[in-house]
Image (cartoon, rainbow, N blue to C red; front, side):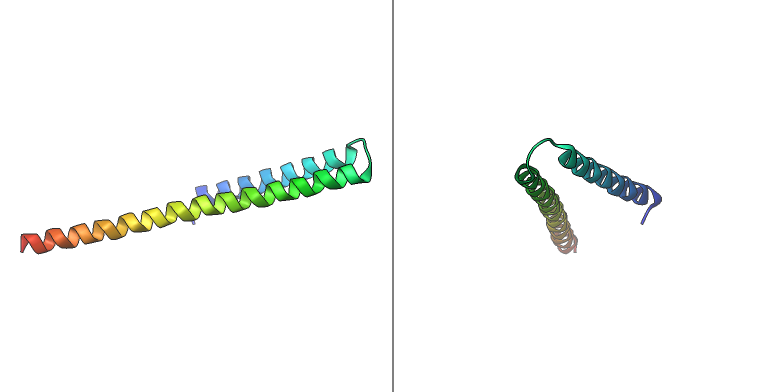
Length: 85
């Protein structure tokens, strides 16, 4: 892993932790009943889960497309080599 990737990973982890702590504090400080705070807590957890799922799906789709492009390039190179012979 490159040093730059490690910095980016640490930055992503830090921002996630800071955002989660800020959300927890804001829900605790929220005026209202426990049921309202529970509702916002569940919605926050669902939002985090959906965000993780979406980012994984986008990454998987990108990696799949890159693999398909490499396979197509290999097929093209093989055809060109056969044509040259």
